[in-house]
Image (cartoon, rainbow, N blue to C red; front, top):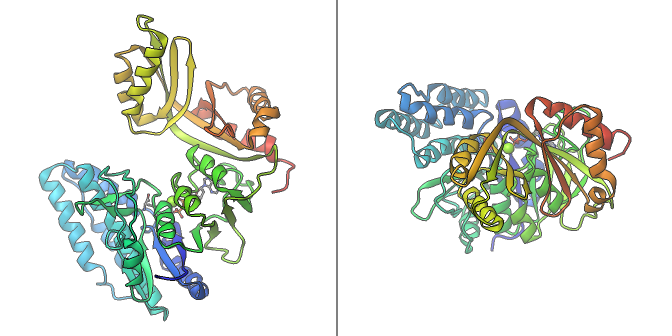
Length: 443
Ligand code: ADP
Ligand code: ASP
Ligand code: MG
């Protein structure tokens, strides 16, 4: 038995440079009595840069040199040996060269390539903790027993049988575990999808029966809207797991949509904390947070969507048509937004990149139309709020702003109303709805 621990996850921005990493060392130091297991993302921008290498490899001009230079600079700025990462950076260099020679990067090769971001940052953070007098050891999540299926790029975890706890218990000092990555049963490196380190933190937290899962970010908690669109959006002090799931699944980038599930199932509270203001309370997420009756809680949004409509030729019965449409949609892997079903047509919002493949498949079932450049805005609320006036208020606000709504739908638990608007109207929509629901209310 490992005994009681807390999981502390630090995101890419919180590990973006030496200054931030030094702050992280102090945050961990303060929590040493609670026995932290640290989970880290790659330094900000590194995953994007690695994916760019994978995308360019087939063109023959992919180089990992700027990525290697960035890592060495962080080591120098931290007064750590600049060769610390040379073995890993050498492997990365060779891998990129291999992809150039082959002229292709499969999903499997891409996952292996991007894994170096988290593998490097875990070693740097462990070394920085060590230099700060806190013994620590970097651990790759695959060596710590995190197993997934083989769906490269969006792998799903396999049940843990106690091996994670066993592996972590054997680690000397503070374990600094890589977020985002894992391995399938054959030992191939996999990734959990963009922003997956939040999910890793929750998976490790659940496997270790942690007392708390702390997600440290560059923002002072979950706010009533994305502060990049609505700077005056306020942090929400306490939230229930379900509403945070709704917020994340309707596009809010603040947490990975799957991250709440392991914590919720294991009954472990989560918190979202600000690395730049470590004493601020942040957002506390728990099962039994009583959501104020009739309250609108937050506005989520997702850009980069398209609407695809398929019209039945009425040669097949309606139920068979619907069955086939959803069968085709099930075989696509992108995120689905609101779906509108009318007597002989289905309109679905989906990821822009999935629109072409979806239209090709649905074209076999009827006439298809694509509306590109759409966005989904979700108003996350208590069910009672949606039923008693919030839905009307959403449409009223958008009508007053002259923003056309193309399609609308309710979340699985009835507590979110989502509307599809033109992407050019996205920030206006989020701001107008935030103003309408949060102008005078305290948080
Ligand atoms: P990390 O790299 O630490 O995982 P991310 O950049 O993935 O952090 O997520 C934090 C960002 O999420 C914030 O900087 C903020 O811009 C964005 N965000 C989107 N919606 C919200 C929201 N409702 N509350 C807080 N932040 C949000
Ligand atoms: N580094 C990964 C990403 O950028 C995972 C994460 O940061 O959570 O998506
Ligand atoms: Mg993130």
